Length: 150
Image (cartoon, rainbow, N blue to C red; front, side, top):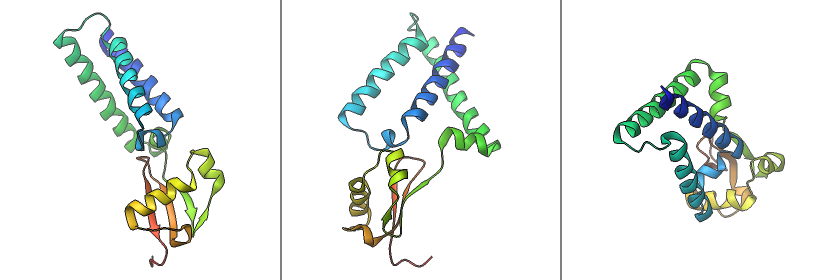
């Protein structure tokens, strides 16, 4: 039972920390972010397993974490307000070619980030060619080109 309680505690701590840090950090992983995730993984492993590195212990912890993840998904589906608190909602960053700077500052996204996504997805070169730019729940930026009829 101690393993399951540890798994629950670590799961909740990681969810809260990644929610505070923001979804953008998960969408574009830099070298620094990758190293940080490796270190977090190692620290998490130590907190979850303690001194017992047996396959049985690892299996129990993995099963508990997967069950917690499925439970969080179910609870978010069952209670949409909880789901929004855990996952957030898509956020419009650019409206009809006009950057919404207050929102962009809040999620640490620059105009260059939006233009990068626009170039990669649609070959768009200028902000005025974009109707909407949306920061999705996954952390990616969706681009809706100007001139598309709704």
